[in-house]
Image (tube, rainbow, N blue to C red):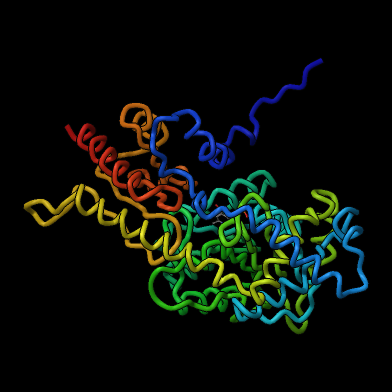
Length: 418
Ligand SMILES: Cc1ncc(COP(=O)(O)O)c(C=O)c1O
């Protein structure tokens, strides 16, 4: 007997993006990759593992707990470093946590998003997302059969236009249960929400009665301007903060957390979240929690200093990429460029506008024949948005690789324009 899989969700291209990002370099070993938003290999310091563990061991020695039991046994579903994370959120984000139970320590953003969607979307409802958007959220939402409504990024960033979309959906009888937003330096387009946008989003959530899933994966990586408070720190009552240590410590730990909404009269999600987690990962590996907990204690509950060298290095790489783009695609006689790009004030990406369509097959052609891998922004879109855009990641390329890669991209574009 065989089981027939006819039309399956697993064929949906959104579910393939993370795999594709990780596999395209293996398939083109001679190409320089500006595809994946991996943190800089140079910044992956494995000495942090021993440092974190030692610091956590010292911390536990002053308590009644046994380090051996904590590290080697099954652990508490919600986590063992929740109070440490609560202090860290207060120090670095100005977020006051009233009940550590509102925190669940997760295996990266990806599990935080999975648990949150499971806790919210029982019985249907709509998830609003900007478009294009990180496929980690849309992929898992699709897998959970959640109805997603993509909102073009320009509309998403315009509070009155976003309100109109939300109102129209409601008037059609669609119940918006949640909205996903990357407040700082989004993936793939590096857009951020201004302070006013954040306030307006919170007030829309109150007016229409939905929750906000706030992703802060890139918030440490600001290269210009002042930090803007997270929505969670402005009003916790409607916001799930979905946090990741993938960029601010390193991704191999697979460490993240979620903070559920808090406040007087706010529904508690902790029992739902923990039940779901107990059936998905049981608990987040204690060893990884100990490393993160120890590093937070060691750094006085702040990751700012740890990330300072990274911020400097990424700023240089971003500047280098912009200089290369300016050199390779100069203004023409009509004071226009063939290719244009945004000027991100943070994050890992520059979004480039090409004069032609650039999708999956063009990415493969460019990688194979011009030895540079750049990722079509359209692969992050659920609509026809962004078919002429590419996402360039500068985080894990050296300055010399960036220079060569942008030169190769120019050669590809010239070839296409012939
Ligand atoms: C927007 C966004 N959120 C979160 C993450 C981190 O996810 P995780 O913690 O699962 O590695 C990434 C990583 O690429 C990302 O781009």
